[in-house]
Image (cartoon, rainbow, N blue to C red; front, side):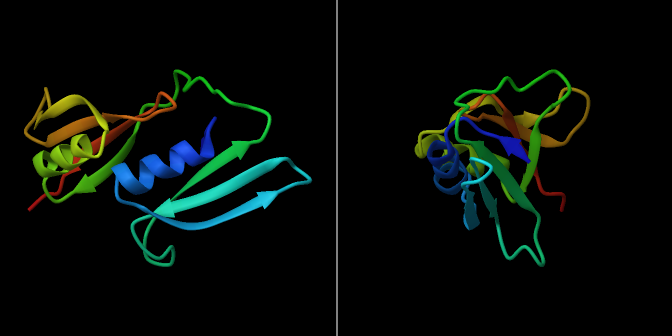
Length: 122
């Protein structure tokens, strides 16, 4: 779960930039928050990302204990290219990791988090 300061912007990022689908969303007026679940397929078979939007909070600091989310992609170079074409910001260009051969790239998320794109192993 990630807390977000702007739910519409976050949903747009995950759906338009990273290609996820909005799986479900529900408002909780008594608690003054909204939950949105996004992913690449049915939650029965795929992992979902939960976004929490607290209605009276427009900003969160990522904190120093959280590193990043990682998403496996078929082609890290193509994925980075598509993300940039959609207006996403690549903060670490695709290429091998500094201590190995795994291909990866990093995308900036509007709320300050980072998303790692990992090349699928063949």
